[in-house]
Amino acid sequence: MMEELLLIFILLGYKTFSCLTLIHLCSYVSEMSQFIKVKSKEDESEDESEDDYSRHFPTFIWTGRDVTLKRNLHGRPVTDDEFLENALTPRETIHNKNNVRNQYKERIRTYFKSRKCFMFDPPSGDNNVVQNMDKASDDQLSEGFKVQTNNFCDYIYENVDVKCVDDNIVTGKILAELVIMYTETICSSNAICVEHVVNSISMAENTRAVNEAIQHYQKKMEENVVFPTETLDEISEKCEKEALEKFKKISFKDKDHQFQRQLAENIEKERRKFSERNDMESLNRCENLIEELSKDLERRSYARLGGYQMVMKEMKRIEEEYKKAPRKGNKAEEVFQKFKKSKLMIASNIMEFEKVLEEKLKQEEEKRRKEEEERTKGSNNSQKAGYVAGFLGAAAVGGLSCLKARAAIGGGAAIAAGGGGAAGAAITATSSASVLTVATVGIGLVLVVGIAVTVLVIKNRKHKSEK
Image (cartoon, rainbow, N blue to C red; front, side):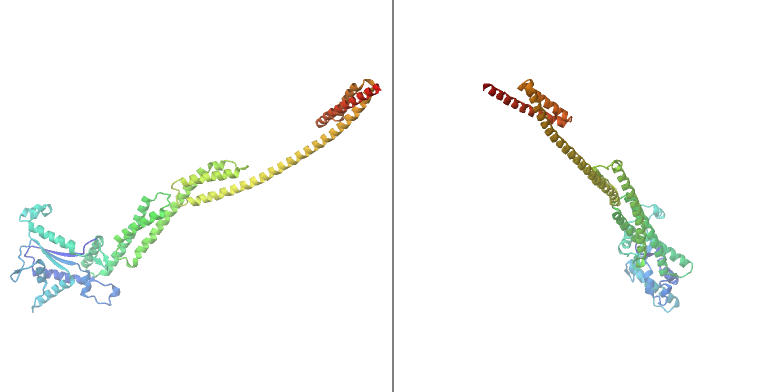
């Protein structure tokens, strides 16, 4: 920020510090006011008062260099300020020339509400030092001059207010533009309107403030955003605050915050550009990551029993590794849900295929079971029939053989022959494995019966012989 605008009138030597010199200054100020309009054309209906001018005139500081004149009035010493005020006091006179001078003095007092006077002793008694002041060191300057210089600087830094136009602080750059416009217009003998000048500068400065704030936002976003990111909004908010601070430092008299709203709109446009870029980077990053993690899932076949569980297990692995991967951006969840949805549809189809396959296997198993039961049932019936047939056949053949053998060779041979005959008859009756089994059992029974019959025959013969 710049201290309040000052008009520092410097006089060299005590001889020039006179009422005549002051009158020349008053004349200049009076003429300058003729080329200055405080109010715009729209407000011309209102008369411009001297107070209106005083609000736009700077603080007046009268300085005198190399002054050796003693500041005495009426035989007593006075301060520099008292000396100045005495010089600006109108004098009672009947001469017209003096009346004009009094008018000039009054205008100085009216236009410059704040007035200050500083008188400086010669900086050094050495002419060589005075002639080379730009190269002189502090040690070469007189103590009195250094004290007076410090007093002057302290007053400027501590007492002069910040220069404002309608409560808007005037910065150094704006001040320079104001001075240029003032001087150029006055030198061209054209009247200058303070309000128009201020508005022109306001337009230029606020436009520059918007442009520089936008550039600051773009620069900070490029420096802080690493695409893709999930914290774009937080970074944007921080950069926007910095841009707004920069705008406020440059802006001047932004009426109704018109340019600040323009800045907000431009920042929002830039934020959307960064957001679109971030979305694209995030989308590409996540899709490439999903493609890499799902390679095994894509190349394997799951159209078999247990395929659904295998797919779900693989999906769980992919999800865990996907969540661990860094810098996925704000599209991470959207991309994964899209991938998951497509794979769950495939998993659902695999589940349906498993159900159909299981049903088919059950039907085939039921068919095999029934066929086995039919074969087992047929085998049991054949065994029973063979068993009965073998037994009956063996009994018949065995009995016949016994009768024949009785006459020929006797009981034991007959029974043996009968048993052999029964066996032969049983073997002849069927050639199947089951019938052979039954026939074997029949032979055993026939042998038992044959032995029993033989024993009875022997006992019968013995009984008859005893009689």
